[in-house]
Image (cartoon, rainbow, N blue to C red; front, top):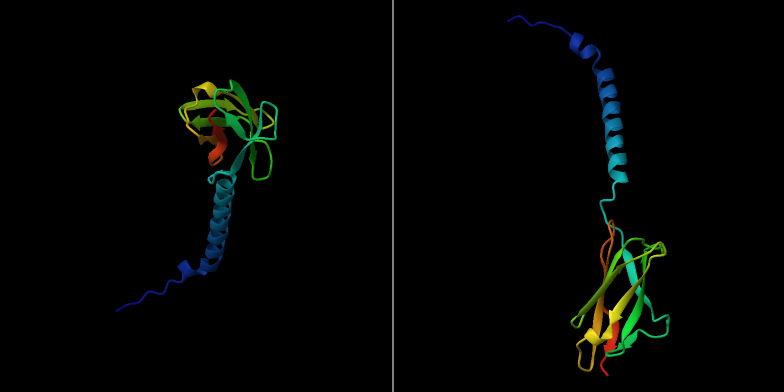
Length: 146
């Protein structure tokens, strides 16, 4: 049996391993930077009713009291206003919606004559915006029947 001894393949092996490792790490770094720029995880936002008919002292409305103006404030977790969020107040056989302005505020008109409740109940609030998790409050606004 004749054995051939050709070591030419292993002559540049350590250099090749180093070069391929560097190229692989550069490619991995580029992929991580690209993925890091994507917003894969939606951010949190918060929705609050900040006023009813320009009053900030109450979050209770009465049925059969006409059309009420409900002001809602939408902010992200850092307290910045969320512009262009869809805000919906619904429940008790009524609903109203609107979009937030550059200050993160929306004013929604709510017809209290359309509300159907005996005693008291609650209207729900939901806010939706691209890149954010929905903000929900099942007890956003207390309604008392007259």
